[in-house]
Image (tube, rainbow, N blue to C red; front, side, top):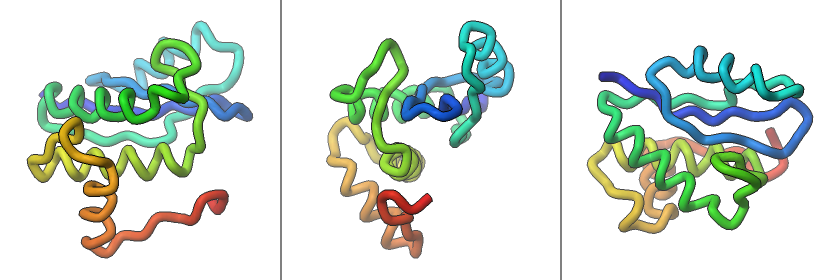
Length: 123
C-alpha cells in the first residue's frame, strides 16, 4: 500500500515533525486538533510500501536526533531538513539503506542527477 513520509512545520516556529501516514492530510488534521499554531505540510514523499516509508522516517529521526524537541518534533534548519529528506527518499528508492551510508552519499546521488539545493538561509 502506498505510504507517505511527511514533514510538517509549525507556522512561525523553527520546529518540524517527521511522520508516516497513508493519508497525510488526514493525519495533519488530527495533529492540528492538539496544536494552537497553524500546521502546514512542508514536504511529502510517497513510497510504494510502508516499509520503504518507515526506512526514510527512521533515517530522518536518526539524522536529527540531536535536534529532538519532543517525540517526533525537531528543531533544526528547515532547508537542511528538506535537503536530507529528499536525499534519503532518493537513496531508498534506488535501493540504498540510509542507516548504513552517510547522508552525503545520498546528497551526492541527488546532485549528480542534476539537482541543486538552495544555499542555507535562501528559501
